Length: 187
Image 1 (cartoon, one colour):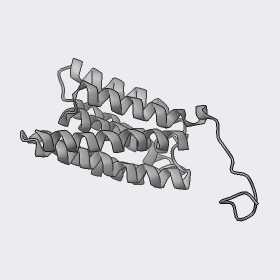
Image 2: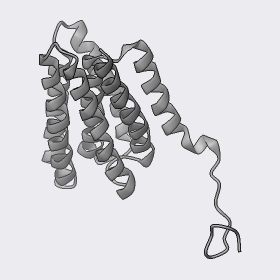
Image 3: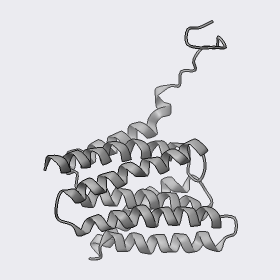
């Protein structure tokens, strides 16, 4: 018997490239921390992440979560260019996604669940924009880090989004959320 294995089987070692989503998530988190953890950046990350889950649920295709990263980013940028707050753009985008998802019986339940999650996580994130003190950065960080529990739920169940998306989000949300909390406490 191999040590540590009750049945004598050797441990399966996955090649490093299999962990690309986690490495990418850590890289994005590190980039945002180096660029300067802010309430707005952290809130955008929370709301955009939740909208990616809604995108996948609405169209009934798990891969659409990755396309949702690009779409949510574009919505944020285009909103700002148009002179509207980013969250107004994401709200309009989410409303369209929810309407599409709720109109189709096959995607109705998942769309309702993801829409409620977006309303909760995104709504709380937008509320953090109303404050001036460092405590709001800590609250935004806490919201982002808690979103990792939602990611973990999807990773474990392997539903709505691909596991790669859930892994990416976990390793983005926890480090960036914790960094935001630490920056707030230091400030």
